Length: 307
Image 1 (tube, rainbow, N blue to C red):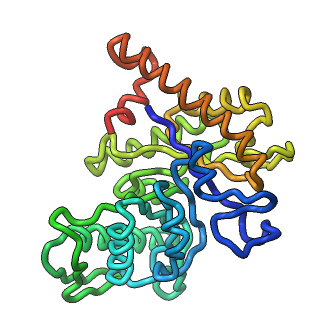
Image 2: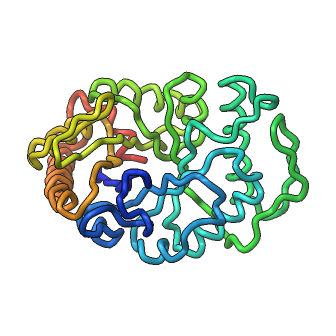
């Protein structure tokens, strides 16, 4: 199973020089230098209308995947589907959509947690229909009404945008099991990660999506050694940090969303971690293949590898 690293930039308020997207404080860390250090994707956590995407930044970030955060309800489904489709076509399939467990809240329309996730479910379902349908669609649902909705110029095969979600409640997991390609875990130990991943797989299976979900884990790499409560903090020693991550790989995690890197020196240190993890994972995968399949006790990985 290949391991992916996603760069999570510091929040704007944490950056002494926040004038340029894609850079962090001190000596500049760019999308290009993050790519060279082993980061295959970059998270944009700035919620807002998708038309405000920084196109210059998108061009500079090639060939990384860009994960755009967009809450259900921030745009109507047809507008959102069109904007995402245009970005996906323009940037050669490098866009992923992160739907957070927060969004536009209308207390009259969404009085409960369950209603909120029903709205998310309907929203994502409509996005997918609009990306796939060859003809305009009509829809009348509890939250959205569409007449003649259509996404033009999407090619013969339609548009595919990977969906990322996360959460803990049963309602959330059911919606994520139906839609998510990547599920962002919130566990703080390998055992908790394994348990939550199992629950998501069960939810996905109920929707006929066995083996369709991969798992990401947020981690903090802080070269200054500051501890952050309630999160997975990596050791400052590259080998020790890599061993921590490999424990999560064994639990079914295939992506790490890394934050805490604020300057080039931090990035240089993490490059050794990424290399160690990827090389170790590749050797393990080769060993498992040589031994004719999944080792005993690793059935949790079978679906991931076949996804």
